[in-house]
Each structure stands twice: as C-alpha cells, then as structure tokens.
Image (cartoon, rainbow, N blue to C red; front, top):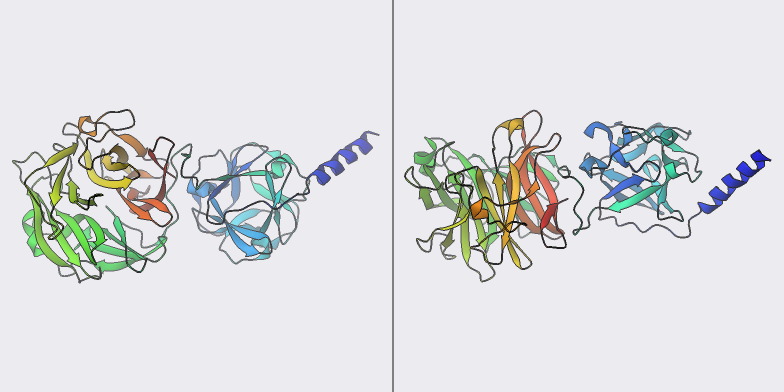
Length: 468
C-alpha cells in the first residue's frame, strides 16, 4: 500500500512537471541560474577557463563565472555560454547516463551542449539535454558549495529546478561586485580609454611607449594596433626624463577627427604636462602632436596628468585632470583648437592631498557623473585602487556623493573595488554604447599583470550608477 501511494505521488509529480508553455528567453541577456533546492547558483568551478572544467553550485555572487547567456540552437534548444570563459555547458563525452558529469567546453553546437528550457508550475524551469533527454540537476540533493552538477532522469525534483535571474536589468544592483566581463586577445592594458569609430568598431588607447593602441570589432576580442607615435615623442622628453612612455590617454572621435589628450610625467612628480594629438584615422603613426595644453611645476598645487575631455550639453569643451596634490581640476577648452580658452582653473574633487586621480565625466539623464580613482595604483596585486563617483547638474560642480558629501571634501560613492582575484580596479572610462553605458578600467591579476576590465553600468531607482 505504501509502495502504491509512493508510486502515485511520483506519477503525479511527473504529470505536474509538464510545461504549459515554453519559457521566454532573452538571448541578449545574462542570467544567473539559482537552484530551487539549494538556493545556490550554477558556477564554473574555481574560475576555470579550460575545456572540461567542472560545473558546480556555489553561493550566489553574480560573478562572471556565474553568468550565462542562452544561445539559440534552433528547434527550441539553447546553448548556455559562460560569461567568464566563453565556453558552453556540456554533458561530458555525450553521455546519456544518469549522473554523467556536466562540464564546460568549446562551443561545438553539439546535441550534448543543447538544452530545452521547460516551465514548471511554480516559476522555475528545468533544462533538458537534447542528446540524453535528461535534466540538469544538483547531484544527490546537495546544499554544499562546490557540489557537482549532473544530469538525471527528469523527476521534477526541486534539485532539477532553476530560477532564471536576468542580470541585464539596469535598475537592480547585484549583491556583490561582479567580475570583469569576458574579453579575449591582447588585453594587457594600463589606464585604458576607448571611443567608437565611424564604422562602429572600437579604438582603445592606453599607457605605453608612444601611447599604445588596440582595436576591437565587438568589444570582446582585442588586438594590438601599434603606437600612436611609433617614432617616439621627443617633445615630451623634458617631462619624462627623456623617455617615450606616455600616460593615461583620453581619446574622443568628434567633428570627423580623433582627439587624444595624454600625459607626460615621471612617477611621483608634478613636473607634468598634458598634450593634444589629432588624427583622421586613429591608426598607428597617423597622429599629429598639436602641442602643450597645460603643464604643472613643482611650485604648483596640482598635477597635470590623467586628462579627460567632456563636451557638455551646450557644446562647450572641458578638460578635467589631476592626481594627488590638491586634487582634480578642470579647465575650459576652445573647440576650434582643442587648447585652453581661458586661465580659470576649477577645483572639482580632492582628498586634502590624498590619493585621488583619473577623473572621467559622463552625462547620463539629468546629471554629470564624475568618476575618480581613490587610493594606490601601480603596485600589482597589492594595488588598492577603487572607483568612486559623485554627480552634479552642472559640469563644473559641485559634485556630491550619495550621502550629499562634496567630492571637494573627500566625498565619493564607491562602485567598484578589489574582490577575489581582481585587485585594484581603476583608471576608469565610460562609453555610451548601443547597449547602454559601459565601464572600462584596468585591474591587476594575482600575478601582478595589468588587464582590461569591462562591465556594464546600470542606474538604480535614485539614479546612482552601479556595475554589473
């Protein structure tokens, strides 16, 4: 009798599992998949990027290794691509057995990499493999971090049910800082800044000998594109002790030309200068130096590095800049020349001589947002850089943080800091792209390498930016 009742309960469970409609999937979004039984997220174990790395469950942190995009395979099936590794969910060796391993693998569009999304009657979904017909599940109903994900005959168990949490919701901050988005190729950068070309591709400039350039067609795969000044920059030598290493370029395409403001200095000195160069193509060797824009000397209370061009709603040009000393400054530029229009210097942020630099101003909605980097750069994995923001309805300020503290009084709302193996994220830039605002920055890996970070920017209900 007990057996009969048990079988009846199982049969009812299976009947209840049949979907009434196909789940709606946004193939342009990133999702976190949260298991109904454990409450934990589908995760690439140990942040791996290699073929065959195991898929597990882990406490939700919304890192890139927990983010998945559904790639349409046709016929109602999808591949699940990891944002961290670019690889897809895979039933290892095309197994059809209960308990078979689930791993990540290079996308081959195989049937063992394709899943049908099946609605349940409770807002969760099941993922049924096309090759085996079996359901993705947390093995043996585990609730532990690191428990393996497997496939098993569909019995509609809570350990086989997943909630799809759509992350590309630009109004809801994630619970913790996300990892950088997936990028490939030549991603060794320091102080990156980027602009869109007329053809829709991306041109990135960063610190390096003669200013290093990189390009991308999709904002994901990057390749080296030489140097702006492959023959060196002798005009900058008085500020660089004769070297050609130029810092923190800012690049903008406007009026049919690329404008690049860049820094010449030596570490720890405010004997510094900001120069302007222009190009009609942006290509290596095509840049013409247009001369000095502003300089600072040891007797000045500011440091003329880390420039950023902002064109306001009235079409006026402004250059913000600064590092340590008395903080972040701003001067007005003449759009006809790209050089200074007057002698006025505005103070827009500062920490009473403390560590603040790398300003970037971005207009969104009714506000100008001033992004800055606090604390220490350039120490590899020991770097403590973090990204802060304030906002103002006027381009010249005053800029206030979320708590109403002026950035000139040390205020700033933190939006990204070091976490896990992401050390010292900073020297940020914001690009208004077709899919929303995008944050570019560098960070340091555990081995001290400086790498390109890219994340989307969302805005909460109060209009404050966050990274996702």
